[in-house]
Amino acid sequence: MRHACMLLWLFLPVATLAAAPASADAGSQASLAEMSSYLTKAQDAADSNHLAEAIRSYVTVLALADESPSPGAQSKADRASEELSRIGTRLSLEPAGEWVDSKGAQIAEAPGASARKADFRPRSTSSRISAPANPP
View 1 (tube, one colour):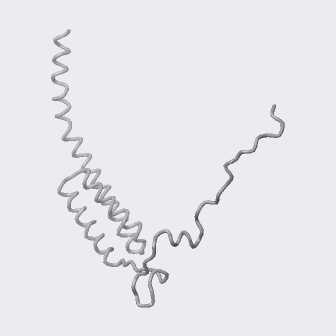
View 2 (cartoon, rainbow, N blue to C red):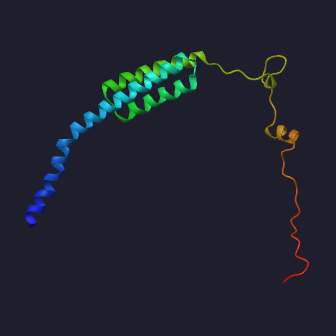
View 3 (spheres, rainbow, N blue to C red):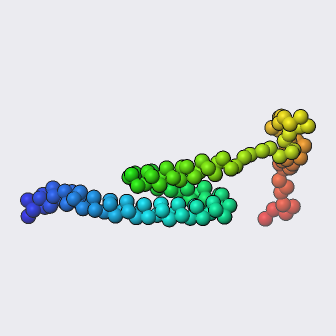
């Protein structure tokens, strides 16, 4: 009985390794299908000008490609990266009028100055706690 357990212990990892490529291939196919779904979802979102949703889906494709590296996953990741670059060229950040002076330069101010103007400091409170008039 002891020898049978030893043989089983020795051959169990070999049997598990033999079954791993089939399950890895199935997992890879599922991952590629999921990536395709996210690419389609992202393209639909970008076409309807919902850029935040499109960016979220493209980043998900990149994350899935990192989890299961394969040539198919890499090509989908490359496509997602290209689309993210395209979206990035459409976006621009500009300061609001409150942050720019009349010459177009950014207004510089000490970080605490804006807090002092609005008086965000905590109010002083009494540290004394009054005792009840008639203790029990």
